[in-house]
Amino acid sequence: MSVSTSAPARGVAVVTVDHPPVNALPVQGWYDLADAVRTAGRDPGVRCVVLAAAGRGFNAGVDIREMQRDTGHETLIGANHGCAAAFSAVYDCEVPVVAAVQGFCLGGGVGLVGNADAIVAADDATFGLPELDRGALGAATHLARLVPQHLMRALYYTSRTATAAELHAHGSVWRVVPRVELRAAALDLAREIARKDGTLLRLAKAAINGIDPVDVHRSYRFEQGFTFEANLSGLADRVRADFGRAETGGTL
Image (cartoon, rainbow, N blue to C red; front, side, top):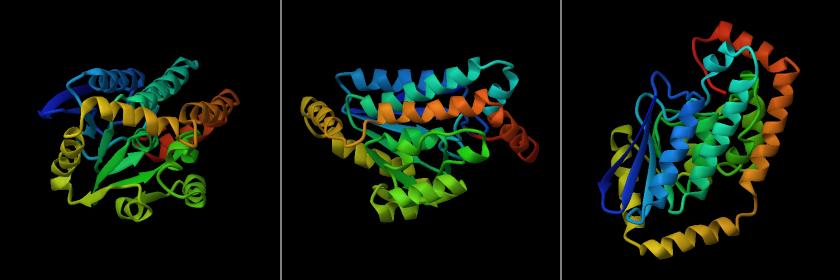
C-alpha cells in the first residue's frame, strides 16, 4: 500500500494512491489516504490538493478479500470508519480538492470524488456503485452529487456505471481529456486555483461547505447503518461469496 504526496507546482500538493492491482484499499489504506489529504490541506503553503491514483483505475473501493479473511466484524467496522475518514478528509480539506480520475472509479472511489471540489477525468473513466453486487450499501450520498436523483437511483439499483462524458454532460466533471493528458489537465486547474489568495481560498471552501444542502457526513453514516444490517444478518456474506466465485477481485 502506498500513499505519496508530491509538490509539482507552487501551491499545489498531489496525493497519489498506488495499491496494485486495482487500488481496492485495505482498512489501513483508507486511513493513510485520509491522513495524507488532511496533512496537505493544513500546509499553509498549499492552496489546492490534487487527488490522483496510479495504475489501471482510480479506485475500486474496499478490499473485499481482506474482509472475507476476517471471521468476525473487525474489518467491516474498520473499513466503514476508514472510508468515512477518507471521504470526510476530502470534503473537509481546508483548500479545494481536484480529483484526477482514470479508468474505473467504483464504490469508495465515488465516495472520494463525490466529495471533491472539482473532477478532471480521462476519457476512459467510468463511475459507479456496484454495492448491491458486493453485499454492501453506501456512497449513494456521493453519487447523488455527481448525477441527478433519478439517474443516481437507477445506477445504484442496477450497479451500472456512467462514463466521464456522461458526467461532463451533467456538469459534475470539469474536463474530459485523453488519458495521457489527465495529469497535465488536473494540474492546470489546480495551478489556476492556487493563484488565488490562500487565506481567501480557505474562507471560500468553508463558506461553500457551510451552504451545502446535504450534510454528507450524516447522510453517509446513515447509509452505513444499513450496510451493518446486511452484514449482521448474513446476507452480505452470501452475496460476497457469489461474487467471489464469479470474480477474481472486487470492490465494496
